[in-house]
Length: 284
Image (tube, rainbow, N blue to C red):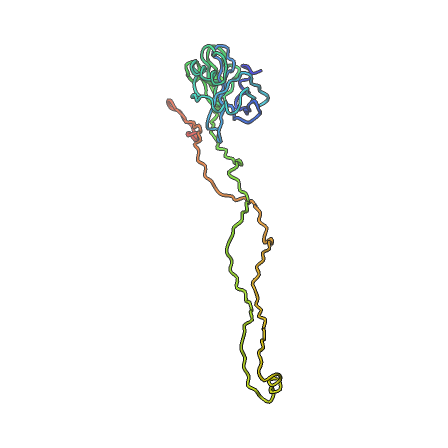
C-alpha cells in the first residue's frame, strides 16, 4: 500500500501502466495537505523525458523501484497539462479527477513533495501543509535538491547537475516489397529466307546436243512443268528463366546531432566582514 512512508521510494521510480507498458519516471510527488498521504505523481514522459504528466496513485502498486499505476499509458500521456510546481488548486485537482474518471476531489490543496532527488528526513513535517524538500500550501520553498547542510547538520553543500543521456531506439520507417508485372515490347529480327525463281535458258544446236534435239517428230506440241519452292518464316516463343531477384537490407551508420539544455548548480561564496581563506570560490 502506498502511504506517507512510501514517499522516498516513489522518487525516480519506473512507471508502468495497467498493461505493464513503460510510461516514464516519477519526478515529483504531491501530498494531501491535511493527511500527508501521497495522491499524485508527475511522470516524465517522451523520448528525452521532457514532458510531465500527472497520474493519481489510487489503485497503484509500488514494488521496489517499479510503480504500476491503475491507468493506461495513453490516458496518462493525454492528461491535462498543469504546471508541475507549487501546490495543486482545487480546480486543477478536479480537472485531473475528471480526466481519470474519479468521483469528487480531495479536500484542500495538494502539496508538492519535491523534485527527483528530494528525500524526507527524520525532522520533516508531514502535516500542517508543509513537507520538507517541497512547497507549503501557498507554494513557498522549504528546501531544495540533495542539500543536507544547515545549522544542525554537516558543513558541506552538495552541488548537483543534469547529465544528458542520449540513446537510440529502433522504429519502423517503411516497407519494401518485390512485385513483377508483364511488359510487352516489339522485337525485330532479320532472318534470311530462300525461294526459287524461273529462269529461261537457251542453248544452240551443236554436235553435242543434236541427238537429243532431233529425237522426236519434226513438229509437235508439248509442255514442260517446273515446281518452284520457297522458305517461309516460322515464329515460335518459349518462356525461359533469366535471373533471380531478392530484397536485402544493410545497416548504414550516420551522425545526428542532438541539442538539449541541461541545468547545473553553482556554489558561490558570500563573505561578511574580514574573512580569510583559500581555494576556488566559484563552486565549479
